[in-house]
Image (cartoon, rainbow, N blue to C red; front, side, top):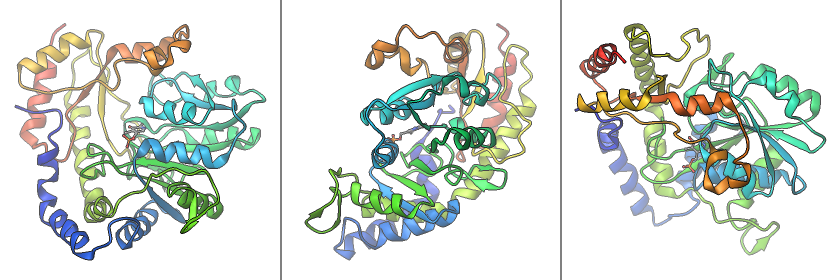
Length: 363
Ligand SMILES: *Cc1c(COP(=O)(O)O)cnc(C)c1O
């Protein structure tokens, strides 16, 4: 049996250091916004190469708080990719902004920069590129457009811990970046956790207040804030796991290379292998015209798969007023994608079994 993802197995090598981290917090007698959050923020900012990291409660809040901090007029437009996890879109609509959906590049599945300019209006204020599946968007093109139209860039880096683009880390490629440390991410907490990275001193200070009731000083509230704090236990766990992220990503990358070389089924479309930048390989996503048959076939062989994602966000009931939208590239991806097991807990034999099974599938 090869489960798509076994979180217990993923955390087993870290069990001792996680226990030590938890004990340290329990004994400290300080559980919210203390030394552990400070230490993790410094370590993660340094990992990303940014001046600041602000820990928050989860990835959705990270994105939402940045958009809130930017205080665009209600109804301002934010350019977003049409194929992404719904949290990217929720951050836009929860701050009374309007998502403007842009098709992905059919080869990389990432927002297609050549389609962005046509989506810009006088109301556009920001671009929200999502480094989906662990690969950085074409930031050179996106930055050139943002500069020309004076737009800010909010990276959704929730799937891109450790990914690089032209030598710089994800999270340091725009004006701010939202991170999630949901347990299944490349750097995962044992519960909910998130962060924002930025080089903007004023934004970082405002975010520190916004995550804590809009207060920088106890009982002084400058903003209508949220309660969205990263807690000490999760911060301590993340500090214990962060040093292992590069090796974990290296293992992911080795497995991805084996899939890229070993899978030769002509009906399967593999992700592009021409990568000059470092992919975080959060997910290994292939395409097949009969995705459900492939999934059943693999499942009979004990191989777990998942789909990221089965339904475009604009076809969800939550966004019913966008249901008339027709974005054929995004919709084809949503019909055909399958995610294979890809995580540091897989053995070489597991990887061989997955490759052999896919090559045997002949529909
Ligand atoms: C996981 C994820 C989020 C949201 O993170 P949470 O911590 O679950 O709120 C946002 N965007 C993308 C692309 C994600 O994968």
